[in-house]
Image 1 (cartoon, rainbow, N blue to C red):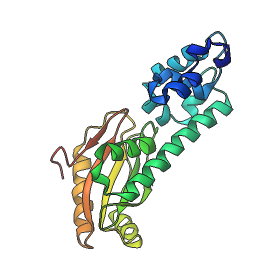
Image 2 (cartoon, rainbow, N blue to C red; image 1 turned 180 degrees about the horizontal axis):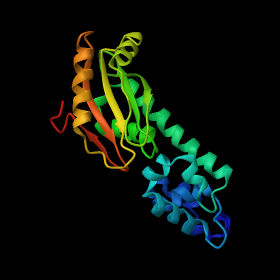
Image 3 (cartoon, rainbow, N blue to C red; image 1 turned 90 degrees about the horizontal axis):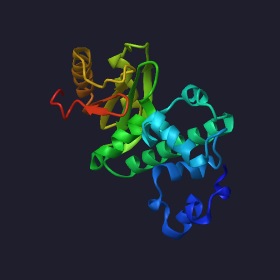
Amino acid sequence: MKLEDLPAAARPRERALTLGVASLADAELLALLLRTGSRGRPVLLFAQDLLDRFGGFSGLLDARPAELRGVKGLGPARCAELAAVAEMARRSLARQLAAEPVFDSPARVRDYLSLHLSGLAHEEFAVLFLDAQHRLIDMQTLFRGTLSQTSVYPREVVKEALHRNAGAVVLAHNHPSGMPEPSRADETLTRTLRDALQLVDVRVLDHFIVGHGQVVSMAERGLM
């Protein structure tokens, strides 16, 4: 069933135009993007199935292309559209973080990191390089690893921070297991990087660990 086959009062597009998009349920918003359902599933039910499968918008936007391609009814065009929405969200958040101190909105930092690092099948270690006012200069994935570990070289982190004239950094990496609890190795690495960067007057403000649907701050845990 297509959206235009629904009664006018039930069509998300018409309701969005008359009442505003904030009035729509999550499944209705997604249905606007999908436009049609899958075989045997009307578009609103198909949209709700996707949200249930991936744990809401966060999980859907975090999903990797291979995960999306594995869903019956999501062809290449729809997968590309969902990937485009996720990339638009990443770019929008990046511009907002560049316009004001990153920790003026801690939730925004978590969302930004989740969009970059959640759902990966391997570990990645990234650094947010900040200016003296703690606004985002750039985010760079510096190291990629295996299912369980990544080798991080302090010299490379220091070199990249100096290259960008950063005044501070935020460290981040993901746990492919989905459990974002800091390990002893994470604590040791954080101290090593903090000490190395301190020598060139670059502060380490936090180290975030990204899991599935959760981002843990080591600073908030008192592990810095």
